[in-house]
Image 1 (cartoon, rainbow, N blue to C red):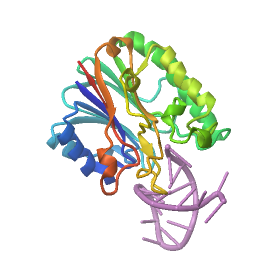
Image 2 (cartoon, chains in turn purple, yellow; image 1 turned 135 degrees about the vertical axis):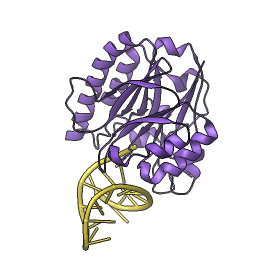
Image 3 (spheres, chains in turn yellow, red; image 1 turned 180 degrees about the horizontal axis):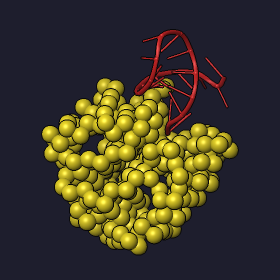
Length: 254
DNA sequence: ATGGCTTGAGTGTCAAGA
């Protein structure tokens, strides 16, 4: 089974890229973040024509998450149980016997800001819920836009980014907290090129100069880690006209 | 340079992203 995560930064704008990419890669499950659309405008028909079902939890303008998949999608759940949140940032569903959790973790804006506190609270609630969810579902994958670069090697300029948003120690501690639940970073199970990133700023030729961060991740429960055969970042869609600022991350499970 | 792009809202120009 081939699984992937992609922050598309508006599904309305990026739908042609998504459809082309699905056809080219033949992934079985694709988690989307920042659809920026309400459910009634979600392109269910276009995806169905391509052979994919979908579940979506969205809102106008901001956020919005979806799981696009071939085959049966069951036991759909939106949001973190017990954590009241207006923002549509998490959707979970079971596909092919695997629990797929698609998350758009808050950006945090600036260290010390109100949004930063919200981000840390959100991560704490996520970890608390996942601890139980992993018992219920031994085969679980958490994928999405984490808005955290876990280590300095995930940052093009670690000195400039030191203690900045996406790289601060409390954010990295929260990421390690997820690993301590038993989750593994699929990307780091394999040898990878140096300076591998999943997001590049639109400004200042960020992509051409490879000034990026690795903030999109696929984390696997122990029951899936042993089945993971590969994990990579596909930079091809980032090179297209009017790209998302994020590239998809793909993993293959036996 | 709290800037530099891009998106959605909505028709002015701003909020938000990362």
